[in-house]
Length: 241
Image 1 (tube, rainbow, N blue to C red):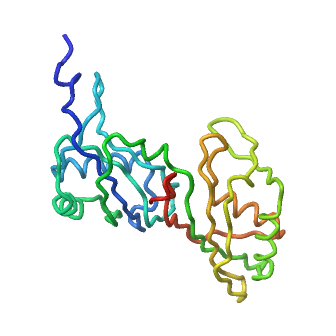
Image 2: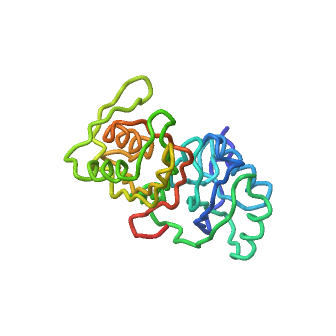
Image 3: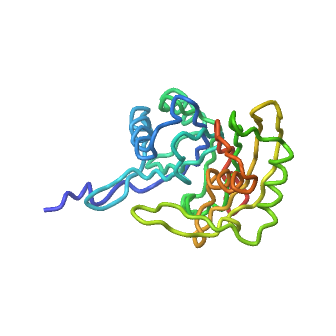
């Protein structure tokens, strides 16, 4: 006989949108491992997370988007549905005490319980990339600026990416909202900061900063190394983050 308690979870009462950062201590944590740490931390903090119904109930925790391995982040988003209502002060105190190592609380929003999922509302993200040329092929700021201009002027940017066990061809250009050279030091081998806004599309796919750097390297005809990459913020369809 089915376990009635498992089939009928407590009714959801509240939905919180949590904005958080990820620093060096969690930089190389895989997304599935991060999810498990968050579930454990919320349980340890005594936060009454609602669960899905059915034979295999899961905590109602939804991340806007997985973070690529090795990437830092400043304003990531996770929605958590609760089976009991908590005040902002209570929830903030519990999170600040028990969040997994390498994660920090940035902000909290009490959102409408029945709003569309945060993942379905994601339309883009802003990335900050610390780049460097190679010792045997220094890169100058003029090269970078010319390369960025070439990418933005291109009608298409045909690329390939590995997807499971097959190679998928796609056009990178529609996924680039903008690229800006924030600064560049011509001292060999050349180092600087690039900021790019990339689209997340249900139909066309997701723009990836590593593909932008690869396309830029091809445009200038010189290798470029990504020293650090940071996802600064996520952009939702309503303009919020």
